[in-house]
Amino acid sequence: MKTIDFWFDPVSPYAYLAFERLPEALVGLSYNVSYRPIVFAALLKAFDHKGPAEIEPKRAWTFRQTHWLAHRHGIAMDTPARHPFNPIALSRLLWASAPEGTTPSRHACEQVLLHVWRGGADAEDPARVAELAARLAPRLDPASEEVKQRLRRETDAALAGGLFGVPTIGVDDKRFWGFDALDMAADCLRGDAWFDAPHWLREGAARPGVKRS
Image 1 (cartoon, rainbow, N blue to C red):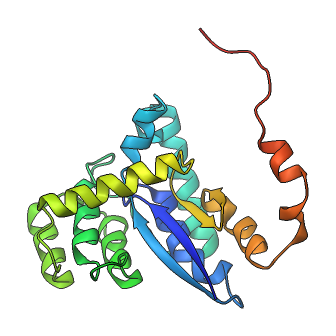
Image 2 (cartoon, rainbow, N blue to C red):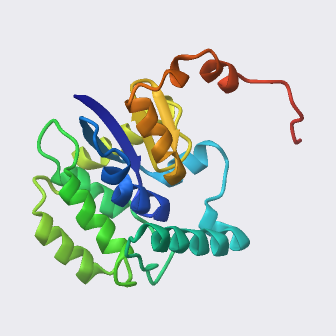
Image 3 (cartoon, rainbow, N blue to C red):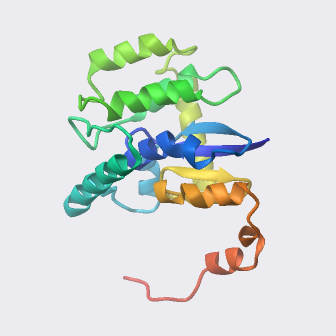
């Protein structure tokens, strides 16, 4: 049984959709998933890039497309009352809820993602976050330095491993970014020989090109 990684941030609608569709995309395969909340904003900062919700035309397209994807795949989805919002408290809550030495459970991740992407409420509302925390009953204090450091380490490790966005699925040393890469990751898990051919490395190699000043 192979273990795959699923890096995500609750702020991302694509991460929510990928989380919901993951079992369907991997049906028939034997696998375990390590769910790894990270800070998407830190990835954006590292690459000096704005998030899709920070560019107005892209924000409008993002939510039109993600709601169409939800409709197409039969996934219930409601845009939160405020977006973008600061998701760090939710990611810390997940790491605080993880059993010692492991990653957060699928159930805990599901509860956090549903908190954000169902009902259309404010994801940062203190009363709602407190109620969510009560249900998850975290092992550690989400505001503790230990939990803060865990989220920071996971994010730094993701950057060091080549991540630039969420969701990203890791299969061995390969990384698959985005909701639309689920089927590609599934084919890799199935042992499709395409992923062992020279073109995987060839097409990922840097090439000369125009650079903006």
